[in-house]
Image (cartoon, rainbow, N blue to C red):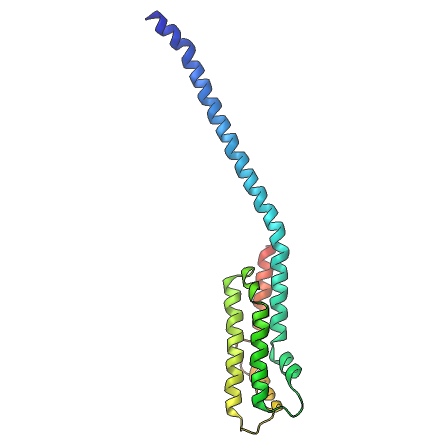
Length: 175
């Protein structure tokens, strides 16, 4: 019995110390893992911020390029019919959009949804206004109708509204 007590007297403290050392080492390992993970996130963030900003810049440029006051004069040619301008506008809007489609990876779903809605509403407006014109209408007539509608109708999703949303999102990155 004395031998057992003597054995317990030496082994029990050793087991307690071993258990405490194990817990401390495990805690240290977990802390190092969390620190490494935090460092990776920080490094990733440093790389992602410029990419995100570049995406916002490209989307801002896209909105600018497909805004009525910019795209219509750019595509309108002397002697062009309203139907020809309609087709050229819709094709150019779609091409600009497809050229920037990868930017959706870097922006919020809300912004991307708004951008798609803007593109679609603009294309729908072009189609609707072209149907209001006579068959022999000129590109100038269609362009004037579309731009006037954008300027006078506050319910239409305008490029300014999209650009304001972009600015809000960019500000949220840094706040």
